[in-house]
Image: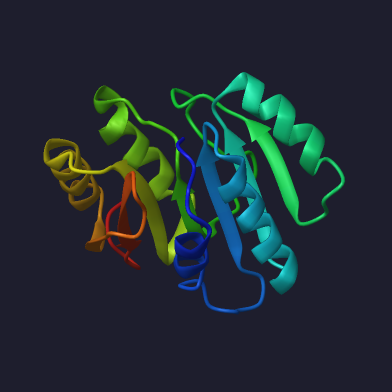
Length: 171
Protein backbone atom coordinates (compact mmCIF):
# COMPACT_ATOMS: atom_id res chain seq x y z
CA UNK A 1 0.00 0.00 0.00
CA UNK A 2 1.29 3.41 -0.92
CA UNK A 3 1.68 6.06 1.75
CA UNK A 4 -1.50 7.85 2.69
CA UNK A 5 -1.81 11.49 3.55
CA UNK A 6 -2.58 12.23 7.23
CA UNK A 7 -5.44 14.73 6.77
CA UNK A 8 -7.55 12.45 4.49
CA UNK A 9 -7.07 9.57 6.95
CA UNK A 10 -8.55 11.75 9.68
CA UNK A 11 -11.40 12.77 7.37
CA UNK A 12 -12.16 9.13 6.54
CA UNK A 13 -12.12 8.02 10.17
CA UNK A 14 -14.48 10.89 11.05
CA UNK A 15 -17.36 8.93 9.44
CA UNK A 16 -17.22 6.52 12.38
CA UNK A 17 -19.66 7.67 15.08
CA UNK A 18 -18.77 7.50 18.75
CA UNK A 19 -21.09 4.63 19.68
CA UNK A 20 -20.25 2.21 22.50
CA UNK A 21 -18.79 -1.20 21.58
CA UNK A 22 -17.95 -0.24 17.99
CA UNK A 23 -15.89 -2.88 16.24
CA UNK A 24 -13.55 -2.25 13.33
CA UNK A 25 -11.98 -4.93 11.16
CA UNK A 26 -9.19 -4.10 8.75
CA UNK A 27 -7.81 -6.43 6.06
CA UNK A 28 -4.39 -5.16 5.06
CA UNK A 29 -1.19 -6.09 3.26
CA UNK A 30 0.78 -3.06 4.42
CA UNK A 31 0.51 0.60 5.28
CA UNK A 32 1.63 1.15 8.83
CA UNK A 33 0.43 4.78 8.91
CA UNK A 34 -3.20 3.81 8.31
CA UNK A 35 -3.05 0.97 10.85
CA UNK A 36 -1.54 3.30 13.43
CA UNK A 37 -4.22 5.93 12.76
CA UNK A 38 -6.97 3.36 13.31
CA UNK A 39 -5.25 2.10 16.47
CA UNK A 40 -5.01 5.63 17.86
CA UNK A 41 -8.65 6.31 16.96
CA UNK A 42 -9.82 3.04 18.54
CA UNK A 43 -7.90 3.70 21.75
CA UNK A 44 -9.37 7.21 22.05
CA UNK A 45 -12.95 5.87 21.91
CA UNK A 46 -12.43 2.47 23.56
CA UNK A 47 -13.43 0.60 20.39
CA UNK A 48 -12.25 -2.83 19.23
CA UNK A 49 -9.83 -3.30 16.30
CA UNK A 50 -9.06 -6.53 14.46
CA UNK A 51 -6.18 -6.19 12.01
CA UNK A 52 -6.11 -9.10 9.55
CA UNK A 53 -2.87 -9.12 7.57
CA UNK A 54 -2.23 -10.95 4.30
CA UNK A 55 1.53 -10.26 4.08
CA UNK A 56 3.88 -12.36 6.28
CA UNK A 57 6.54 -9.67 6.81
CA UNK A 58 4.00 -6.98 7.61
CA UNK A 59 2.28 -9.39 10.00
CA UNK A 60 5.53 -10.00 11.92
CA UNK A 61 6.14 -6.28 12.26
CA UNK A 62 2.62 -5.37 13.33
CA UNK A 63 2.17 -8.39 15.59
CA UNK A 64 5.20 -7.29 17.61
CA UNK A 65 4.10 -3.65 17.62
CA UNK A 66 0.50 -4.33 18.69
CA UNK A 67 1.20 -7.26 21.02
CA UNK A 68 0.51 -5.27 24.21
CA UNK A 69 -2.57 -3.42 22.99
CA UNK A 70 -5.80 -4.53 24.69
CA UNK A 71 -8.07 -2.94 22.08
CA UNK A 72 -6.21 -4.41 19.10
CA UNK A 73 -5.78 -7.93 17.81
CA UNK A 74 -3.54 -8.89 14.91
CA UNK A 75 -4.11 -12.02 12.88
CA UNK A 76 -2.42 -13.49 9.80
CA UNK A 77 -4.86 -14.54 7.10
CA UNK A 78 -5.02 -15.52 3.45
CA UNK A 79 -7.74 -14.25 1.14
CA UNK A 80 -8.52 -17.83 0.17
CA UNK A 81 -9.49 -19.01 3.67
CA UNK A 82 -13.15 -19.62 4.39
CA UNK A 83 -13.56 -17.08 7.24
CA UNK A 84 -11.49 -14.11 8.35
CA UNK A 85 -12.56 -14.20 12.01
CA UNK A 86 -12.60 -17.14 14.41
CA UNK A 87 -15.45 -16.13 16.69
CA UNK A 88 -18.90 -15.18 15.48
CA UNK A 89 -18.22 -11.48 16.00
CA UNK A 90 -19.58 -8.98 13.55
CA UNK A 91 -18.02 -5.62 12.80
CA UNK A 92 -19.46 -2.16 12.27
CA UNK A 93 -16.76 -1.15 9.79
CA UNK A 94 -14.53 -3.22 7.54
CA UNK A 95 -11.60 -1.44 5.91
CA UNK A 96 -9.96 -3.29 3.00
CA UNK A 97 -6.51 -2.00 2.06
CA UNK A 98 -5.18 -5.24 0.63
CA UNK A 99 -5.23 -6.01 -3.07
CA UNK A 100 -7.93 -8.54 -3.85
CA UNK A 101 -7.23 -10.26 -7.20
CA UNK A 102 -10.05 -9.92 -9.77
CA UNK A 103 -10.75 -13.65 -9.68
CA UNK A 104 -11.37 -13.50 -5.89
CA UNK A 105 -13.55 -10.37 -5.70
CA UNK A 106 -16.89 -12.21 -5.72
CA UNK A 107 -15.77 -14.85 -3.25
CA UNK A 108 -14.18 -12.22 -0.99
CA UNK A 109 -17.36 -10.10 -1.00
CA UNK A 110 -19.44 -13.16 -0.14
CA UNK A 111 -17.11 -14.09 2.74
CA UNK A 112 -16.96 -10.65 4.36
CA UNK A 113 -20.73 -10.21 4.20
CA UNK A 114 -21.15 -12.43 7.28
CA UNK A 115 -18.50 -10.51 9.23
CA UNK A 116 -20.28 -7.16 8.96
CA UNK A 117 -23.19 -6.14 11.20
CA UNK A 118 -26.49 -5.14 9.64
CA UNK A 119 -26.14 -1.54 8.45
CA UNK A 120 -22.36 -1.89 8.79
CA UNK A 121 -20.00 -0.52 6.17
CA UNK A 122 -17.31 -1.97 3.96
CA UNK A 123 -14.70 0.60 2.94
CA UNK A 124 -12.47 -0.40 0.04
CA UNK A 125 -9.25 1.29 -1.04
CA UNK A 126 -9.18 0.87 -4.82
CA UNK A 127 -6.51 2.01 -7.29
CA UNK A 128 -7.37 5.41 -8.66
CA UNK A 129 -8.60 5.79 -12.26
CA UNK A 130 -9.35 2.09 -12.77
CA UNK A 131 -12.96 2.17 -13.97
CA UNK A 132 -13.04 -1.54 -14.87
CA UNK A 133 -11.94 -2.55 -11.35
CA UNK A 134 -14.43 -0.15 -9.74
CA UNK A 135 -17.28 -1.58 -11.82
CA UNK A 136 -16.29 -5.16 -10.91
CA UNK A 137 -16.38 -4.24 -7.20
CA UNK A 138 -19.67 -2.37 -7.55
CA UNK A 139 -21.30 -5.31 -9.34
CA UNK A 140 -20.00 -7.78 -6.73
CA UNK A 141 -21.20 -5.64 -3.83
CA UNK A 142 -24.66 -5.28 -5.37
CA UNK A 143 -24.86 -9.01 -6.10
CA UNK A 144 -23.95 -9.82 -2.49
CA UNK A 145 -26.57 -7.53 -0.94
CA UNK A 146 -24.65 -4.32 -0.25
CA UNK A 147 -26.40 -1.03 -1.01
CA UNK A 148 -25.70 2.72 -0.97
CA UNK A 149 -22.47 2.19 -2.89
CA UNK A 150 -20.50 5.42 -3.26
CA UNK A 151 -16.99 6.49 -4.08
CA UNK A 152 -15.00 9.24 -2.42
CA UNK A 153 -11.89 10.92 -3.75
CA UNK A 154 -9.73 11.61 -0.70
CA UNK A 155 -6.30 10.16 -1.42
CA UNK A 156 -3.75 10.74 -4.14
CA UNK A 157 -3.38 7.07 -5.15
CA UNK A 158 -6.68 5.51 -3.99
CA UNK A 159 -10.36 5.90 -4.57
CA UNK A 160 -12.51 4.95 -1.59
CA UNK A 161 -15.61 2.85 -2.24
CA UNK A 162 -18.09 2.57 0.62
CA UNK A 163 -21.09 0.25 0.74
CA UNK A 164 -23.61 -0.63 3.44
CA UNK A 165 -24.88 -4.06 4.42
CA UNK A 166 -28.63 -3.81 4.77
CA UNK A 167 -30.59 -5.54 7.50
CA UNK A 168 -32.54 -8.57 6.38
CA UNK A 169 -31.14 -8.65 2.86
CA UNK A 170 -29.51 -11.69 1.35
CA UNK A 171 -28.45 -14.91 3.01
